[in-house]
Image (cartoon, rainbow, N blue to C red; front, side):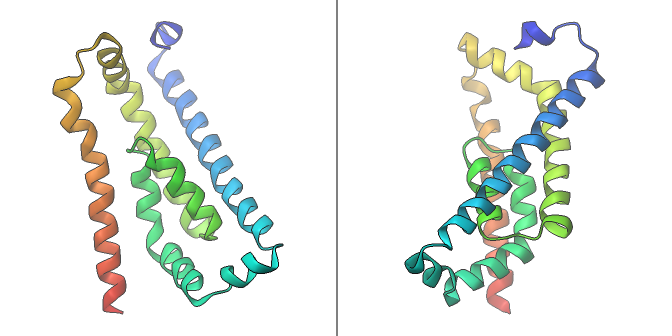
Length: 156
């Protein structure tokens, strides 16, 4: 991919990644909403989806899930799960998910447009080992944000 975009101006690559990030995050969110809607058609699943635990999870995701969505853009592997969960647990689109998704996309596109290509090239050439602790940092930040959100929820 680095060869494909070589010679492109920074703003064009950044815009391309922003478009791709927004399109992907929206598709995953709406897939989660579709899964939720489809599973509600089953009597057994509908009863479970109407449980106290699911309603509590929806409330927590609606209230504290936006930082997790934003930080998910800095992870590898968790991003899809977090965004799918946001859709399945019906995080409000306008006031929560969309702003968090746009912010995460802007940060992700900036990182990937600048140092991201260097990391990919280091990985492909086998010189990534010294960078590995830096790649784990976003996962640690998501874990910290989750712990903090649970702590705030426990106080209420």
